Length: 290
Image (cartoon, rainbow, N blue to C red; front, side):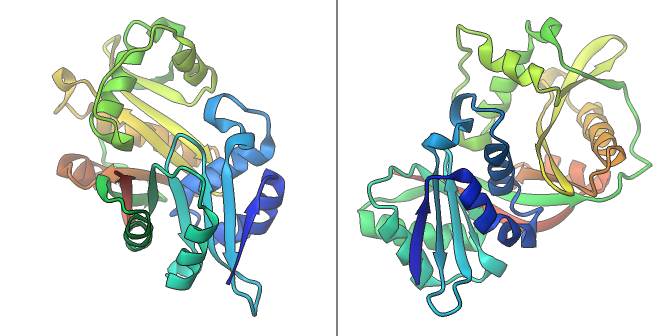
């Protein structure tokens, strides 16, 4: 095995894109980031590839990529083992190469995440904990029987009185390993999200009741998230309607599949998404190193 680290995002894109595309829906995180970085027209915050860690581990004989890794600080390293075939030698090779780079955690297909975390923390004298036990779903057709409640619209600056609180409540619910809800003094991050035209609000009888977004546009797949409904509006079908409507919107735009991540600790959301038409494709782990 031999290790290669990249500083040029285009070079990394050329080396790994078609490898990651073997499991496009599973690889929405690394693919989405890679496509964004290769386009190079959005360098806001973590999106600037100059700060990224990008590496591959290849088979010495064939030259084929066995393992691809991308980390966009401050977020976890995201891994993909080609064909979902885990090789201890390639993981050890990556760990050797990544020495000197702070790694907060790992996000990957469940078996790979656990395998990497066991080896990495053992060698570093660390431990790890589960930030989120996830399931990845994909949808190719929206269930037409889902009731259409309310209407989705793009978010706008008029939503700023509540939008930051909804976004932070979504993160504080456990997504991405966050446990606190803090509203920054500056509105820039939320205005940025609004400007991307991919965050939608569901209105019912003129009242904003739920939030749903689209993210990570790929060749045939687009991600869905965040999805959030305030506690006082839950149980009324708003989230189901919002997700069904933006999923159909994405399909109407030409995407073949919509992909979303769920927290397995939340059986309600997992049940809701399956009723809409989402089908599980694999499990994923988000692990934090401590």
